[in-house]
Image 1 (tube, chains in turn green, red):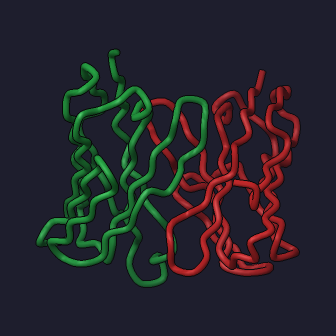
Image 2 (image 1 turned 90 degrees about the horizontal axis):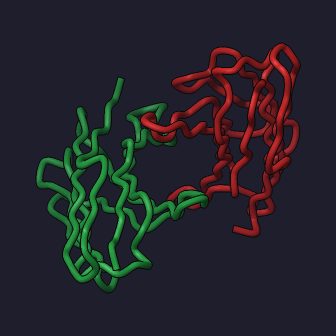
Image 3 (image 1 turned 60 degrees about the horizontal axis):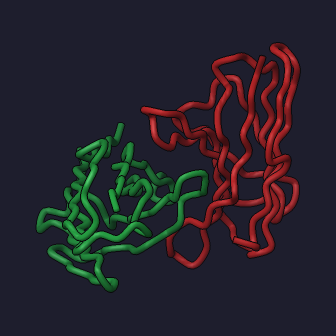
Length: 113
Length: 111
């Protein structure tokens, strides 16, 4: 079945440093989604990328979708303590499974003040 | 998100007992999902629904059943709870082709 892999599993950064998490799918994706889960909270949808090579920005967050639509990245510039949490990427299945998301295991970000 | 309510928020139950978790949405979303979240495994799909009385299995469906008699309610039942089902359970909905909206989760402990 479809697999979505994320690296790194954990990342500790000093406040103000940049952070990047990478996502790779075993299959070509129609879109990729990113979620953030704060400690003790639930996943919250951040963004969806659809087009090959697409780049989207949300303030200090930059999301990229690879040309082959099999990989993606999330980059945070100048991290803040409010960025703490686990970031998940997720991709839909194909055909009848297109409404099911397979999630990566997430990257847990810690920010040291 | 106020549109999705999970109940109970916390539950401790004994091995071998049946348990039902409830997810209620006010978004009128067609698609609903049950995921479990465990350390080292991320979010794994248990069952999902694509309409009233239309459900299907996910990746980790063994030991679980679901029912959806109304658009707004999606129930997850552990037929005979085991310690391996100790987890945090999240309900999610999807509507309009956008991302999932998750409930606040149910923390279930099987002792």
